[in-house]
Length: 432
Ligand SMILES: [Zn+2]
View 1 (cartoon, helix red, strand yellow):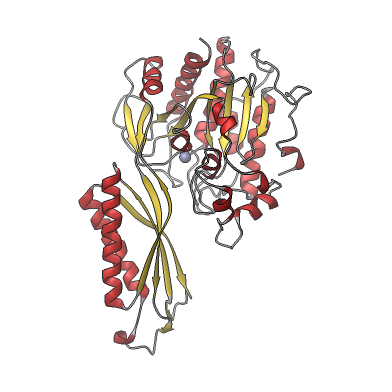
View 2 (spheres, protein in one colour):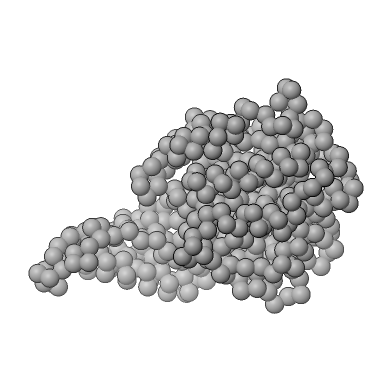
């Protein structure tokens, strides 16, 4: 990232005082189409072997995505801004006027993620803004497109860092303690990418200027797959969190240590993984151990430590509390048999989000009334902001439901239907 991406530096379309000039006019002669934007973004951070994306916060791939966002903003004559938490904004109209209608999503990915989770929302936002201009719609409220930083939490273990910081749900102190697998702290990573980590913190003035936030996202399930509808509206986001399970045993020789003399944490871990699956099935929750670290990680060594990360979600808080308690109990009981000490640390948590009914119902009306309304187990920046800002989400049909995988997909026609739906929503909210 370059010096020019410093928040203090106004972009070309900002006025002399750094403030945006009212800009409700026509778009520049050529703006990249949905297809062109998609094509340009597609190679960034893609792993040749897996075909999946590795766009982790504050890495080179992330910087390339951010440069792409800025170029999209500037090619449309929008006012580009970088906020104190590293989130990018592109404004049509005066960013300081208030009651803004904001859309957007994120560009980072999980390890070997798909092309659609995040980027579909950002690309669709630019395409929808172009659609508004093509219709000759004249916004009466400021419009903005946002790219929230570090949504997936792939590098530092905490999801939605950019929006959590803005909403004051993550303090700068706690953010400073986040570290990646190589021991690099979040502030160090930001600094290496050319950002000022001293600036991070709650941004209530910015959030107060937002009248509505609508995030379009690829569906991460199959609720729409068997319906004739390409687009749905979110009802709620399940409560969800991440827990770290540390299984402490004793390292020893795999060839000379008798089975009865071992304190093998891998056994306790393996049993806990199976227990998590069973408890989730019995309670109607979801529980996944998707990440594991082993010390010393030698083929011929009994491990001294196995560290497993549990992601769990449920339709309601009581069920989530219950399933976590049951999994922990199973781990501790098995640990006693294995001579293994078990410690459980909650690393992150997001309570249930019920999107406000007023905005949700308005979206339904703008889209013709007959739109499926669906809940989701996936977290989003929209969920984080929902406590401070009226928030809603649109989902675009995913034929297989697969997400967080290179196999994640959406049909081209469905993506374009999503753009039209978002255009209708922006026109209805901002141009009347
Ligand atoms: Zn996402």
